[in-house]
Amino acid sequence: MTTTESDRLHSQPSRFEDMFPGYRMEIVEGNIMTSPVKPHHGQTIRLVWNALEAQVGPDWGFTSDVAFPFDDENEFCPDLAVIPAPDVEKNKSAYSPDLVELVVEVVPKGSIKRDYEIKSRWYASRGIANYLILDPLQGHCVTMWNPGPDGYRGQDTVLYGTDVRVDSPLGALVIATAQFPVDPGAPAQNRG
Image 1 (cartoon, rainbow, N blue to C red):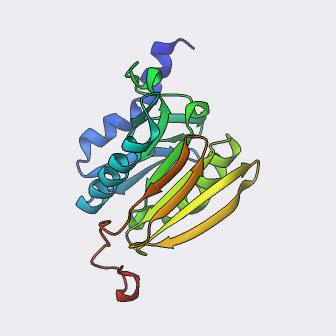
Image 2: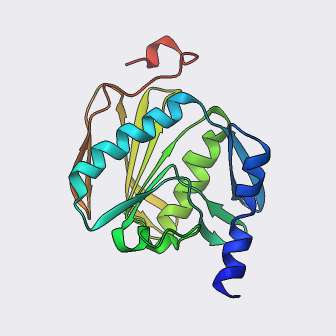
């Protein structure tokens, strides 16, 4: 398959996104999955991106909602992925998951199982060093590290309002969560 054919195939979910504004789409276990996008989602991504960008240095770049095909039935579009800056500069519609050092997902209500279970297995199996799940529904961040073939072997949960510390191949990273939005529909005890 040529690069052009590959790019064409991996751009199919983005064509559907144009037909369904307010939803993002990815291929998970052979199915096209949709998730609604709300302002809290974008705000959280922006806050994390800004925090990380100030810490990782110029050798690293960021992608958001860009395809990372894992196999024929799983093409994820992480909310934020940290990959080498020269690869970001290529401005492609799809990248190899092997480039990712750190991946971030912000959990919408319809994606809880995908983000917590399915993606964590796939991200770990490809050796992505760190996976952060930001959950405005629960008001917390789950950090995962030490990837293995069956998933991550290390995991912590940090409530919003507490700094998240990530020891990664990119260095020791700190993300302040005090300003992260919590979904207004979340239970009151989860609001930081």
